[in-house]
Length: 112
Image: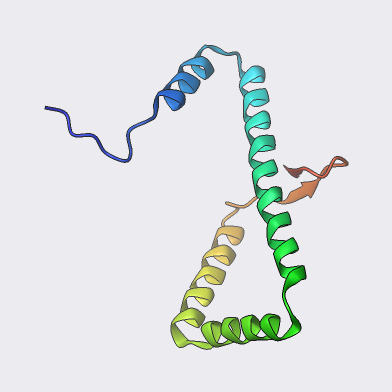
């Protein structure tokens, strides 16, 4: 009896994997580029939604949200987590495990 888990690939994921395995490298890059384009559309839409919602906020509710964030980030645990993330990023940079990012003319992010 097989137990299904959340980690099992969906039918679509498996189909995509099977297709990619048959493609030459330059075509795989095109598939990845297109997938990133689709992902960017989703991210931009949710960003636009957030910005539109924020425009409708009153000054008071905006200030209340700012205060909540300030209180959250002032907690010792948040400071520890942020400090740890900063040290990890610095360590990765010093070890050469990071890549500089440039913005292309069409607004995409690309490794330098």
